[in-house]
Image (cartoon, one colour):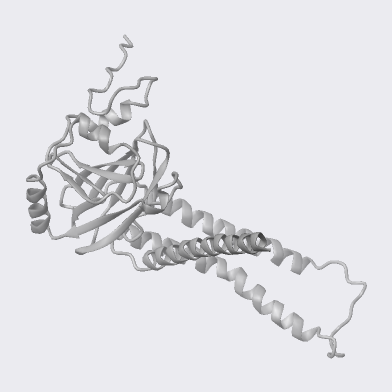
Length: 305
């Protein structure tokens, strides 16, 4: 009996842990939805508008169906003897037209809406602005994010500082399995893949702190793979860059190899120097069958003359 009681207790503990994990996942999803509906940048705002527009169009068929289901149930209830009874009824052209044409028109409307918005919100299209975009290179690792500022010559782990009001142009890759870069308050998600680079544009309307995450399962440390987005005034961003340039650590090839090892809950770390062409060399590790150490020059392109 003791063994049975211990097994029941162990099973209860295991189920309790699963329930907590499920609750945390649902809470995280709810938080993401709340952020999506309260955007802090023009890209996220346009995506919210697209979501609301598509939802509104689909309500054209959802609302009547709900209303008719209630009305039909009330009209044809067992106690209503006045409801028409037509056991030989077989076909109605009007009903058939409504059943097919209305959903078809909705699909067409949503398709046109999504088609136009897909091109308008192309993640590779730079945001129109009188201010040049800030270029940031993003590398997904196990289980953290590395942000490289090539113009400033600095790098940061798990924190991306940006000046509010200035477009941000991201080049994104992975030095591990596929990840998905996502800052719900500022932009949509886009995949980070080894040997490739993807692009994403974003802009913060005002200073603030936002949460970014990996939304693609990537192993044991996935649940802790969050990063901080720090939007500041241009002056504060310049001060942040100046402080980072005073950091004692340099991100050379050896330091990068150490950083790329699997690790969880990595605190924010600053690097005041960079290995030349670090981002390109990370991509080159996985291209054309070459495998080189990050930080070394990428392989030369083959001579096709």
